[in-house]
Image (tube, rainbow over the protein chains, first blue to last red):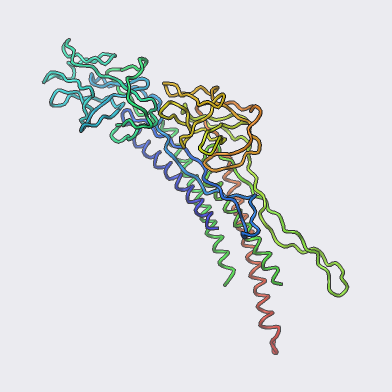
Length: 247
Length: 229
């Protein structure tokens, strides 16, 4: 009998991870370049047998509940939003900007760039583009022009090139903190992005969280959580009834 | 007399087992491709009672209930649109094949993703089978051609957990793979809740039978032999 309680509790835990994922998606509904999380669910192991061991039937098997796994991120393109800022870039198609901080390389789709104190192009949180792009000191953002191939020119002079990279399996990328990802064994090695990937200037890629989907998902998760909790309640009542045999 | 105690207790045990199974259904109320279970009860063989005086038949005596069969409801469920290119659903009959360490398993849970070599894999990282049991390639733009994913016709599928089923594959399945959607769970929450309530009340009734028999026994033990009863 107690198994039933733990079975339902496993279901509640799975719904809880789903709620956590949806809550994070909703919180990032306006984060530039954010990709929503994909969760997958499955049932758990089944054990055969019911009744006293000598007469147990193996026709009946009891499941152990449900589990949730994160299976990467939604790779769909976010909407392109016009900002007019010459240092804003958006990537259309598969690909990432490569940035470097503290000797570590990261991938990001957040193209909200700035010029740091040393004249280097960096993301808003200070990670430098890799390979680095340096503009002459004192350059104002509106003097910089970025071509659709990534070439950065300042007053007609070439200053460097923003290169786009990708990995074979974006679902295997690690991280997500600060909009940054890292290549792992599961994602495969970083290589140049395909030619079909385009860079747009003066625009940003919006978060690809679909509010409607996320809200529906949240309601579904909440109700499923409630259903599983009811099963625990009933199991509790059933135990109470069993205890009531001896008054 | 005490036989009644055990008959009622067997009913309680059967209801408890049914509740365990319903708890699993409810835990999987939103698991894609989950197939709901139904357990059925049977009664133990009846005894025929006869009276000791003339050996005349009095009638049958039941010996209680037991759960002896479980059936999985394999009917295809409604397919829901998710828009994710690697979410696949089979419309109609058929199963996805997945190569696991224990052999080929079948599933209708199509929440797939890609691995480092660009093969289509399931949520546990096992390869999804395409034509000729070869892996299915995910294209560079992160989509998969639904027609490349094999659909198996599986006879006598049996649940193995992790959304997997075992069974004998053979013949061609009629189902069509659809990308960007998932099959819903086969659990009907309303029915599961009603079953749960009914089961609890049945258990309560069996408990009442036990306590009633108990108080009868108590009277037998304390009052029948009493001189001033």
